[in-house]
Length: 306
Image 1 (cartoon, one colour):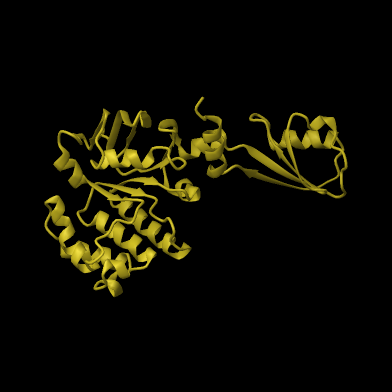
Image 2 (tube, rainbow, N blue to C red):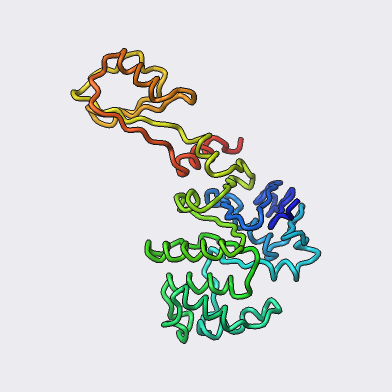
């Protein structure tokens, strides 16, 4: 049996009686890109801080490639690289200075070849001798990824890595992240750009109010919760819909168009038979399936605390 890259068992953290993380358990396979999603205040960052050893654990255990992150914290911290959501930099050091000595914090010698690779792949070379305080937001994000990777971690944690960056940089960062994942680095990702999680992650866990409310393979999550919808275009306005559409969730879009949400077991062919019987003047049909953003809202809103 393969040792998980990350194994979290009954993890809890409370602040002033409030459960920031409430008895969550999940594991990540080596080489996986795993998405941890949830609204602001869901407990994602607190979970990441406990994994990386920044925040103390109240109850539960975390193991990184089989090592307990409390009992073997020196070993697990060397195995983990974290890019935090907040921009964490040493304002008066240059990029070059920081990357040269940062691996030493983990007891790992500087590797000039790896450092050069990070500098070039992340487009930092023209800015090597600039102090951090003079960098743009996008450059700070690139630097933070380089800093998280400089000691060659086995597990890379990315907390909102593309927040506030432009589209071009976002694509550049994800291309590089896919590349290091293909080379064997396991990745734990949080993001508010849900299309990124849909494209990148093998599995997705969703947190809300400190609890883990769902954990599923991405494609299964989309199949399970991704309601199928059909946009129906009519050749003339239909002032009153027939009773035969009562079984559907119907959303009028304009006088000529409707959006119908199909029941789980109904096929589009069966819908066509129903529409023909009702003698609706149909010009065109367009099918679509709810994406991860729709599913995310559906799950989090349906599981509010009582």
